[in-house]
Image (cartoon, rainbow, N blue to C red; front, side, top):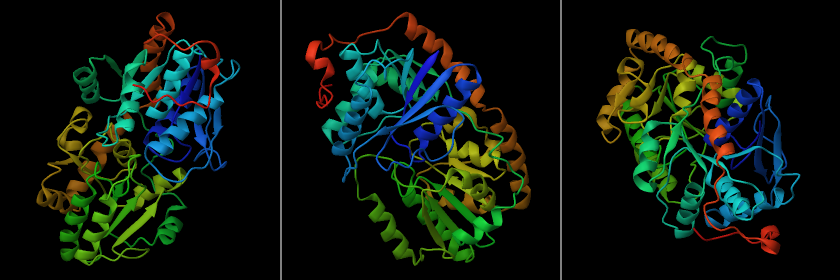
Length: 404
């Protein structure tokens, strides 16, 4: 099969990491999977890939929210505006941007239908973003989810059935044994000798950033050499004041920010550096309030460091208590206790061994194989959700639909 996989950006983020790894695994199974993403910078994808990739021409745009999402949908429509660009057996969107573009292409009869992977859904205050989210789900001919939790959510909120495909971790890249470049990375980021706690996803409400800051501030008073490393940026397309709240919390706690300081904000980190960063850190702190699956959790476990996660799905779907420290994410004191417990040598050794074994089960080959029945169903039963546009309207690439 020739499979077009669409994600929202060439930058490192959850859906993009998943898209590239899935494309590589599908190619290893003998298919031709081509990963697409809008690329306003012209720099290409965040890492080299062993599957074909397409950097979709995209216009630079200032701002966020509906303006940015609408522009990226238009970029995809422009790219797929010819039959040659649409020469694939299966189209799969990993995000709402790609899902909306494929919905429009389906309605215009340029493609027969598409699959959509729903990593999670968001609560948008902007009605346009909410309409686009719904449109990219209800018009899909085949739905995939990473966890049973989100499959149940789609069934309850949309009356839709989704196949659970899970995710994977690359055991050849994410390994527990130290490598020569690790110490250079330590110096470059300003990491001390520990303990170093790692949070991935920026200052994001979904990632429970405020709770992480407050728990770390309490621990730091007892362990002055402790550091908190915050990697990445918030993923929601809708701007909020949450980052400002987190910065204010750091100031109130007297936690300085910068290389060598108690708190280090790295922004996005090159994918090649992530395994080393995990190994340099003491514990991953991921008490998320809403999570698609927890890619960083599997990566950290594969690299041999303990993880702290929320004692709720989807984490409880694939992790046993002995494989991770599980907490109520709304209990700041419990989070502080878990951070302190992760430093105990005996507990660390048990979590390390159990985590490595748990991560080993999650392979991208198995994840890719779980997609194949859904692809076959889509090929046998392409579905047009609504009467499509025809004639000149089908080729109007400048009009971005706003209807749900």
